[in-house]
Length: 108
Image (cartoon, rainbow, N blue to C red; front, side):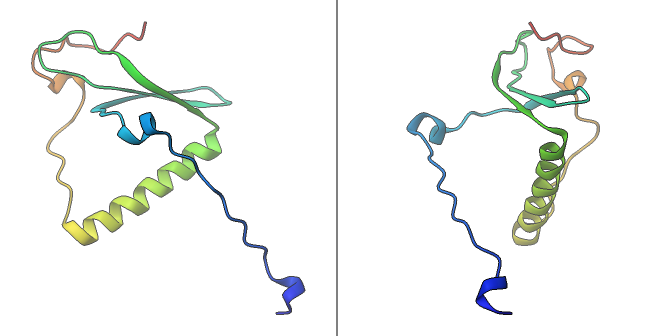
């Protein structure tokens, strides 16, 4: 392949601010969608606390949501190859959090 036909590699510089570098802990993601977008709300649910605050909302196209799914699957496979299988016991949903009200969450 001549140099003229080689794909051009582009470098992407991603800036990570100090606040964003700290991260946000989440143990619950609520996912909704429309024909045009997926919305993922990240929150944390604590036992005995019937209210949870959305700490981050990510809105993306269906194509980007599918790419995220693939990337997560690939990263989970690599993690499990290095550290062993991630065990998920039973059916994890809000009904399994002790002290949390039964039913679907309401987002205000």
